[in-house]
Image (tube, rainbow, N blue to C red; front, side, top):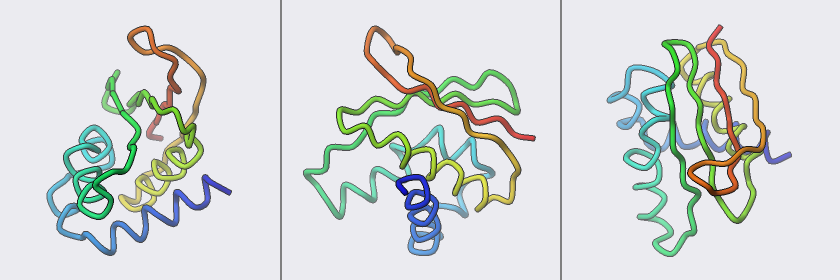
Length: 115
């Protein structure tokens, strides 16, 4: 259910803030800049929100690894948002998640592979 809501949420966000999407060339550029684009807008609406932290590693032109760190464990929501991002940019891809560590902290690794 959280994944489905994430897809829906991304669609709503893209309609509410079209100017953000005019500035980026594709899904990887947007995802690598979540804090600069999306979290800025969330903070305007909810200044005290406890937002997840994302770190990224682009391993190739077709693969991006996002490290999700949050005590709230809404990684399924993040997966849905990432899938919604791919759909928005009309890009086919796969999204996989697994547990890992990032700089000594428990994290979820979400890998996005463009097809």
